[in-house]
Image 1 (cartoon, rainbow, N blue to C red):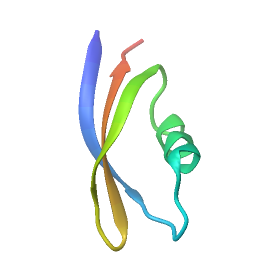
Image 2 (cartoon, rainbow, N blue to C red; image 1 turned 90 degrees about the horizontal axis):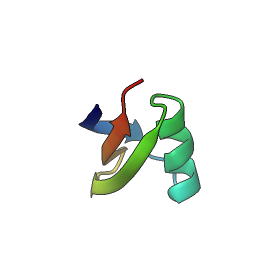
Image 3 (cartoon, rainbow, N blue to C red; image 1 turned 90 degrees about the vertical axis):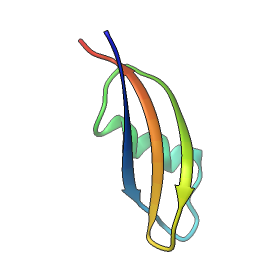
Length: 53
């Protein structure tokens, strides 16, 4: 089954796709896709789809 969630992660001064992927990998396995949907002063909001084991 494929599931999608919207999550927030802490923002660093110089964040990039590698930083986001590391944060997602610590929370999810089998990530299919992700997209940044909002950025605030302190957080990055990400939509992530992943396969449940």
